[in-house]
Length: 272
Image (cartoon, rainbow, N blue to C red; front, side):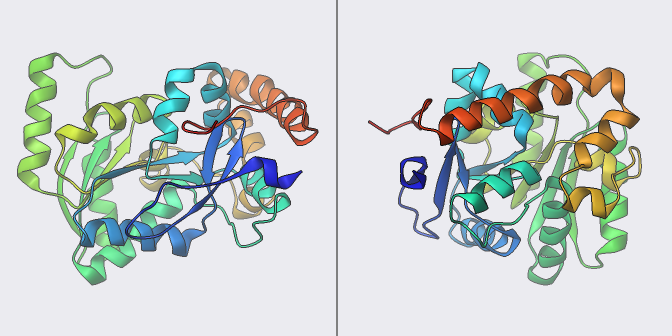
């Protein structure tokens, strides 16, 4: 049964990462160490890739929007951001998979970057949040180089504004552009800008900017580890998040059950 749900990522000069087909989304079978290794290799090889962090919400958004599913599957890496995704990967035989959560990935990379000299640009968040994040991270990781920040307005940028920020990012020459626009907006943004930006890696990290600057409270670690972070976020932001958790979580369980029983299968892009 498990064999029908597994596929292998396209050949990569850095690492060949297995992917797990979850409702048509190819989630990379990685842990934090493998994710960092892949990102570092892309930087060192001066390649071009983008990374999608993938909780249940992203899978369900992809289930509803084929265009989003296609661009997520084109990502160089799709990390298991939520514990339900991790549990399912392990159930399907990948015992070494662990959560690669947006805020944790940003922290882990920043520690490595401070040692290796990799540079970052922060794009996203409310006004002033990206700049505040740069202060927090450089204080926390001495030697970390943040070469620019930009918090876009809560509207679509004009073509002229968009061209200007692309020029600004390219002039700053970061190794990684961290994108904090929330899913799926950040995923569409990365796919649309991948060929226009010279930075080797773009990484969408959702609410990481707000969490790491203290603007929004994070769930306690025990809730994160046990898969109950959704409950904490629902309690703290019910009006904004009720649909995400009370509608999509039960639907996810239902559709995955059908897939595990062999009653439903969505192929990944490129599958027969």
